[in-house]
Image (cartoon, rainbow, N blue to C red; front, side):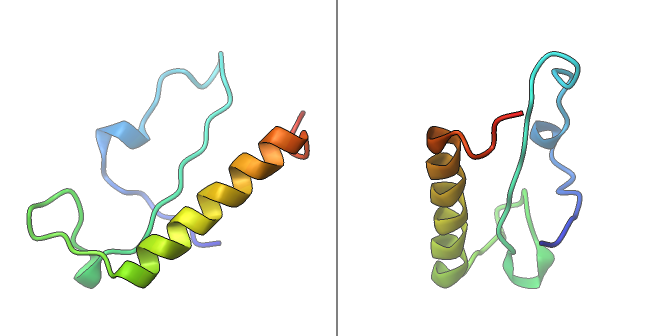
Length: 66
């Protein structure tokens, strides 16, 4: 896992004390994001969908419960 700050206002939430939250992302070419020049390779998008799918499956199975 790699941790980073996206710089996006959507990544900053004030709901922290009232709800659990998580974020994931995929790398953009040359690190450009939140810009019309942003480009993400198909294989990185597919990998991001695979991570999201696994998390949803684990949530549905109760594996990530408190």
